[in-house]
Image 1 (spheres, helix red, strand yellow):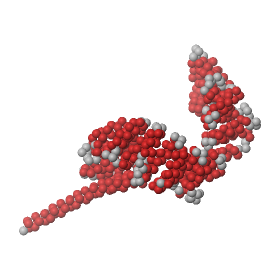
Image 2 (image 1 turned 180 degrees about the vertical axis):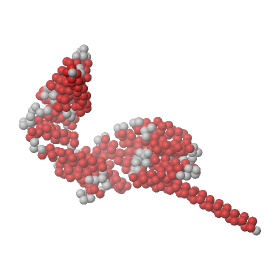
Image 3 (image 1 turned 120 degrees about the horizontal axis):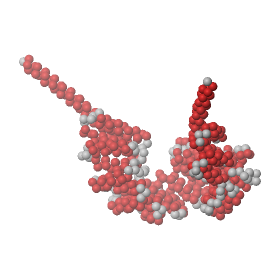
Image 4 (image 1 turned 90 degrees about the vertical axis):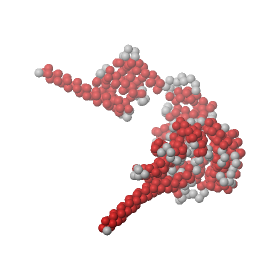
Length: 591
């Protein structure tokens, strides 16, 4: 009886133990599965949000995700790593985890890590159902890292081994991306046109037609592009694609200078209710066309319609990039067309306070240039008047993009009888005015006339030589700089050739410094004299004197800071050592 009771107790204990092991095993499996499940769910959430952005850039393989989406991809990676590392013996979901990781790295645009994880999947789990798609992600990653040969080989392998992946022509279109990265637009067009023949989806056909037309436009074959865009269907269920077709057509009309057609199409697009979401873009394009047609008042009216309701109280919270661009264009019109700088500054200030970073930066540059112009004009230092007037011309030319104002400024500078006619800024201003006349005003005759004034009036200046170069005539001018360079080369010949007359070379280098002390070749020549006296002739006293002169006269020059000062210390140490030896000998002789 006791025996049976003991057996029963053992059986109960064993049953409990089995149950406990089962519970632990179940909990481990459940935790393991939950980790993967959470990773997969997080990925799907991240990709769903990312996909909305990707659809806005259909010609891009992948678009950098914003921080909130990127952080979700990061959590996917962390959880996937946990599935592999913490549950290393539970390999059932390891290929799933590797694939998730590879995709998350890809969409985070961490391509080398994406390639590494997906390649690991291919090696460790060759029979995984994710293998075909993993090759596709690797091929895309190779394109993004510009490893185009590897990408092309892998795409051809996919097309041969897994043709079902190309049902929507997406694989073939990757070859287009490769061709474009190789600047092979003609080859890309051939691939797209081949894909068109087999494309069954109406949406895919519209995408292909648009891409072909854009490529023809980029090749400046506008007639072909226009032919495609004018005949391509516009479908109600694809308003964005239809808008892109019309927008591309407007751009083609602009390129062939058919501006009236472009305006008419913009008006038609504006009236199309399906393009409601793109109204401001359409208006902005119309404004640019009106500017090209010199219909400035109408352009202003269009830009003001875009910016209506935005003022200094709400400008910082407005996120419209088109409104920022409209403010910027208004600023340019008031600045360049009407010379109304107060009004222009108001518009640039509005643009600079908006969230469009490009417009804000460009507007900031204009505002800074206007402030610089104001400060220069307020400068009352008559001794620097010529220099100040020249700088005003530079601001007009290089910062405010007003070649006509710059030209007038430079010509006024040289025609002012109070100016110093021997100032270096006068021939420089003449050269600048001539270049503007030729390139900006398209007046070659006027440009040549001004260049000839420079040559006749300042025959020894570097600007006379510049004038001959700009006129593309034989250069006969020998400038002071040319003479200095020639003298320096003659000194080099004495040092290294002509039987290496080092003493004569030292003197020749020193003479260059004395004759051209204000030119940048002076410290260089003085250092060459010091170095030859020091290293070759070992004339320490002479070298010391020359090194010291370099730093006295040209303390900021590299020949002082980087060359003379280090050598001077060595010379001083040598002279000190020689002096000690002389003292020792003198003491010894006295004994």
